[in-house]
Image 1 (cartoon, rainbow, N blue to C red):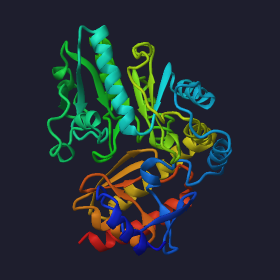
Image 2 (cartoon, helix red, strand yellow; image 1 turned 60 degrees about the vertical axis):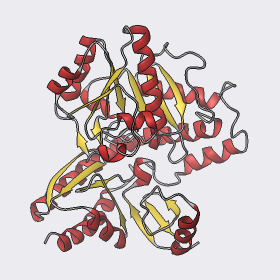
Image 3 (tube, rainbow, N blue to C red; image 1 turned 120 degrees about the vertical axis):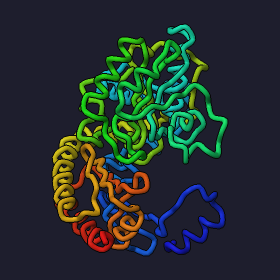
Image 4 (spheres, rainbow, N blue to C red; image 1 turned 180 degrees about the vertical axis):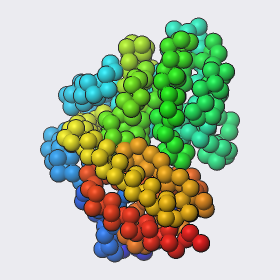
Amino acid sequence: MTNEQAKALTDQYVLGTYGRWPIAAVKGKGCFLWDGDGRRYLDFVSGIAVANQGHCHPKVVEAIQKQAEQLIHCSNLFHIPAQAVLAEKLCSLSGLAKAFFCNSGAEANEAAIKLARKWGKLQKNGAYEIIVAEQSFHGRTMGALSATAQRKYQKHFEPLLPGFKAVKFGDITALKEAATAQTAAILLEPLQGEGGVVPAPQGYLESVRQLCEDENILLILDEVQTGFGRTGKMFAFEHYGIKPDILALAKALGSGVPIGAVLTGPKTAHIFEPGDHASTFGGNPLAAAAALAAVEVIEDGLVENCAEVGAYFLKQLEALKERYPIIRDVRGLGLLIGVELNQPAGDVVAYCRDKGLLILTAGQHTLRFLPPLIITKDHVDQALEILAGALEVYQS
């Protein structure tokens, strides 16, 4: 199916909830994506931080094929061996205690919100409020949307779930002032992705962790985008020497097979009981087998490669900033990198796509780079050459 054929069929039969690019993705391998017209692209999007392992990694493909021949789905009425092994792996990697599996990042955050609410009811005299950060993004389902403190996403869907307070990201004073006896949890991204690729300021998350200890508040970290090596650590919280009470994960966990997870520390591991929360498909045999293979691929040197190549990429982008006044700021961790421009970024994204490089925006003025963690410095140099051409055109 050509790009135009796919677009026509989509326009006719699929709800218009996405601002799609004029290309149909039909094949992926490693760092590259092919469209319906046979054109190859260097992919610095990775399905929005999903294909950290690269597209169609052989080990993940093999795991999917093998499991699909045995059992695809059975429901959580049964013990699922691959799910149990995956839970053990994630708890070992994170230092947390137990796991719940779902199908997406939004679902993971919904489960985290419910867990915090029940904990507050049972353990903190009915506390129910959750403090979030301005410009956050936690998903588009109603609970996750209520926690997403961006008006553009919320405005058409009120009334939202009550009990959320939003404060400026990085402002520990504002956070302390917002906390009350009714505060059950603080929900944050270690690095705001959709909000503009904004890492937590130095010392901020450490201070938040201490506040939670002092005031008996749960710390929930949303690592849907930052988890599984994306920032140069297996989990972004490792950069700060802290540990959350609840951790929301998805995206790269399944390398494209839908799966999300909530990991809980000992403080909350006993809170949910049968019937409190569930997912028909969550952690099913196929998804769990794919995720286990996907995590093992990341463990095999990709975190270290991300840190090394990410540092190189950031350094080269800083050099571009010196050459092109259109660049206002360069920031990020590992291979989650933002380049803020002094004008809207959409034209630069389109130019790069036309030249064979796929990148994203994060807000109106920021370019977002999310390449697979398998990339080399040569791939970075190819991307930089195309990006420099775009900056040359649009800096005036």
